[in-house]
Amino acid sequence: MKPEEWRRAFKLLFENFWIVRTVDFDSYNFLRRHQNELQKELRRRFGMSLVIRQQYIQLLKRPHKLASWMGDIGFQSSFDYALFCCAMAYIEGLENETPFMLDELIRDLELLAPEEIFLDWTNYNQRKSLVRVIKKLQELHLIEKIQGEEENFEQSEMNQEVLFTTTTQARAFLSRAPQSYIAYESFEHYWQDLQTSRNLEGNQLLYQRLMMEPVIYRTAENEEIFVRLRNYYFHTQEYIEDYTDFYFELYRDYAAFTLEKREGWSEVFPSRRVVDEILIQLATILRADGADYSVYGVIELTVEDWEVLVRKLQQSYSSYWSKEFKEMSLEQLSVTLLNRAKSWQLIEENETISILPVFGRLIAEMEAKI
Image 1 (cartoon, helix red, strand yellow):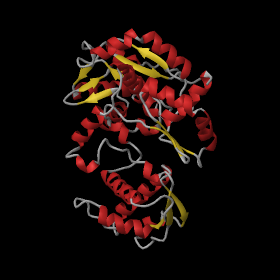
Image 2 (cartoon, rainbow, N blue to C red):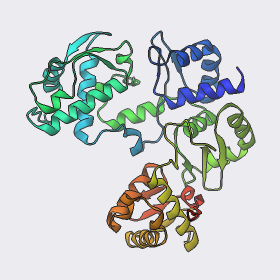
Image 3 (spheres, rainbow, N blue to C red):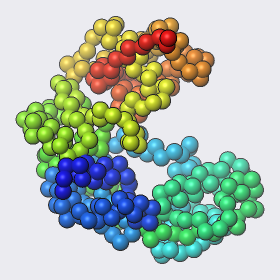
Image 4 (cartoon, helix red, strand yellow):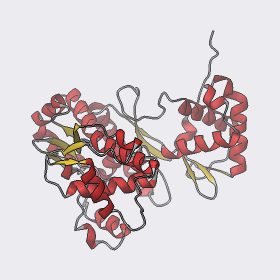
C-alpha cells in the first residue's frame, strides 16, 4: 500500500464505528481490497483486530481509560441511555433482517425495563426519548425504517404504526466480553477482566491510546510510559507522519497525536464552534497571568480563582463573541466553558479546578475587523 492509502485506511477505521457495505460501498471495497496488509499491520503495531464481514468492516476499539466523552452519543438524559440499552436487548433477540412494528418494540420494552424505570407512554417526554433512541438506532445502521414515521409517536401514544427491520450487522453492535456478562458481579469486575485479557505489548498499548485518546498526561504513576515515548520518539514520529494525517507531539508533561488541518474530521479541538475560540482566549489570559505550575505542569485553581479568570475573560474578549455568549451570566459562562474543557481533557474538576498541561499551550491573537 502507498502512504496515502494507509492514511485513508487508518482514517476510515479509527474515525468510524464500522464501515457498512450498503452505506459506503467505495470505502468498504477499498478496505476489502487491502484487507491482508491492514489486518497484519493493525495486529502487529497496534495489537488490534480488524473484522471483515460481507456486510461490514470494523476495527475493534476498546478504551483503556474511561472518560465521560466516550458516552456522548447525542442523548439528553440517563433515561435515553436506559431505553437504548433495553432496545438493544430487544434487537439482540431478533434474527438479522427481521421486520417488527413499533408497537412490538414498545410492548417488549415494558418487559425488559428494570424495576427502577417506570414506563408511561402518556408522558410526552418519555415518548420523545423513545423517538431519540429509534433515530439513533437508525443512525448506527442497526435498524431500517420500512414504512411510517416515528415522529408521530411523539404527538400521541396511539401512533404506533411504524414498520422497521433489523439490519444484517445489528447483532454485532454490542461488544463481546471475555466471558458472559451475567458472570460479572459488577462493572468493575468486567472492566478488570477486559484489561487483563488484552495481552498487549508496551508500544502497542501506546499506539492505541494515542490514536483513540485526545492526550496522555504524565503523572507519578506513568513515568515509565514517558520514558518509553522519549526512547521511541523518532521512530514513532516517522511512522505516524508517513502513514497517518497526524503529527506526534511529545512534551515533558503530555503526549498527543495532533492535526494541522481540522477539515474532514468528525471531532477536533479547536473546532469552528464559538465556545472553542473562547476557551483559547481563556488560555491566553491564563498564560499572561503567569500562574504557578506543579511538577507535572498542572495549575490548581479554586472555584473563586476560576470565576475571577472568567470575569477577566469577559472584560477582555466579549466584543468578539456571538450574541449567545455575550448575554451569558458569569455563572452560565463558567459552567459552559468548564464542561467543554472537561470533555476534551483540558481541565479536571474535583475539589479544585485543575488546568492540565495541554491547555497551557493554547494562545489566541484577536484582530479587529476592518
